Image (tube, rainbow, N blue to C red; front, side):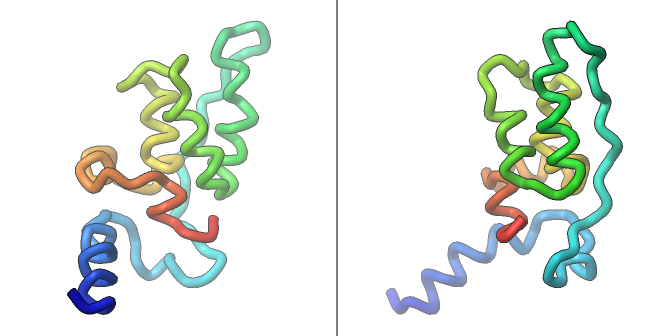
Length: 107
């Protein structure tokens, strides 16, 4: 298989992610959903900083939320992280099997 064919096979699944491709120019991301921060003392308050960083565009922070074993699937925290702060469709990114850092390289 030629190197170009491998690149196409790797890049093709990323093309089907549902986000505004016009917003993908350097330094820009689609708008994020507002995080739901927990009150101090709540067990989820430990994720407040990660939610804020995710909202501000850190895809590593988004991934750190949903990949944490303490965060249950299909909760707001999990879904917020898994959708890269509400930037992509949950079912689509699950189907593609990519992280937020992979979906938005450089962020």
